[in-house]
Image (cartoon, rainbow over all chains, first blue to last red; front, side, top):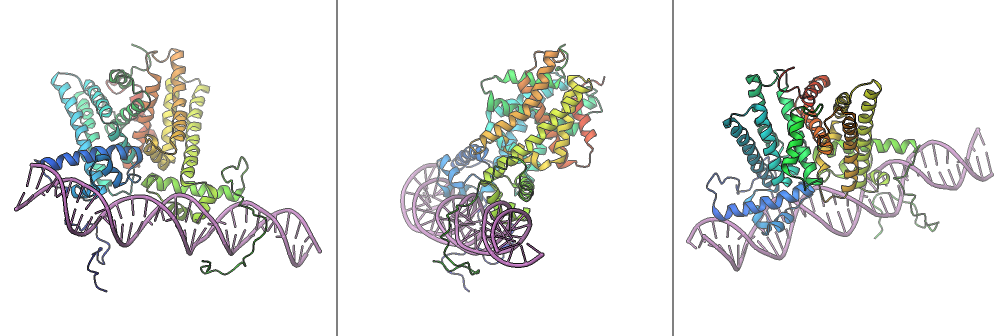
Length: 231
Length: 231
DNA sequence: CTTTTTGCACTGACCAGTCAGTTCAAAAGA
DNA sequence: TCTTTTGAACTGACTGGTCAGTGCAAAAAG
């Protein structure tokens, strides 16, 4: 059998772990060419809402292209595959989130606040982020605990990035004497993430009219154990 | 074109009464025939793990059937569609969870415990449930905040069921004087759910060797504001 | 007790449709 | 000129759902 001249559909070896294509869009180390970057941004935005609504598998590349207002070919010109687009989107979004969290903690630090204050500020920052990018948050939560997926590793890295930002403050607080040395840093961080995530999603989904301050104070009360009693 | 594939037979003619198939699977009001129920159970179990791992859309009916050890047609004999199978699975699982939560609260009640104790018992019950059905929990979290989906309404009902169990205790505690009247019951309940959900998922995914007691005490500490200080 | 009938539960090949990914010539920037 | 985008055509694989047909245990008939 000889290769039919027109098409060259993947030779024999199927086991190829890596896509053979010449492309390699994912580079763009810095600078980012002007036009290209704008297109990618549009694709991110289109993809994030669609995937948040329907999930990754249920979202088609055609839909993403249409929503972004570009041709399907453009998607593949800018990203090696649907999965790669998704992975880069994840990294992009979580980068923004962690930056925001760390910034909040550092700001508190600079103002001479305590570690609880830092945690509180991070909760607020988290809520702010979720309010600004609700779709991204949905998508993050929805994909976070899936296993057996192509982007497993990306997800792990990204999750760790977020949790670490909180764990750092917790650790500092323990070293500080401000927090009990008996707290379980890892679990407490996870619990705090969950608290903010689910409460914020509830807020956005079912009571979007409420203010950030309002929601923040409810969580703040929980964080500081001001639920029982009323000191 | 007739040409029956491999099998022969059964002469044509079937002028008999046009029984269009007995269909009507989803009923089974009570008793339910033994065999049928066993098959449905196997399908639930197969579907829950697969969907937890891959998500609803990425999971095929063929996979579910194969994992359950039945033919594809059997899936459709027992459930009207893939979505219906999923919806019934959701209702089934959440039914178990809420029963467990309410039972825990009532037990505390009977023992003359406080409302914080009830909340604490519910956290423990929640953790226990998640430890027993981690896949179901993954699936629940992953699909909970999706919009534009066929089973939207089922999800809402089911979510409300869980949250209400917690809100009830919170309300009772406020009426009781045990909780500050300023707490936001709705948001606090959501936050507690998130706290348990994410912490437990973290536990199951990354530190499965730890004991329930261990995890419970970490969350308990957070609930009771015993994080800062060490009273 | 033996034979026949009934109908539920299950089967799996099949179909019509869908999707990710590819290709490319031509147009549009810059 | 060089880069980026377009848009439509195509493919190969896969998917949800269907349906004619099978197996079997219990009821009915003899």
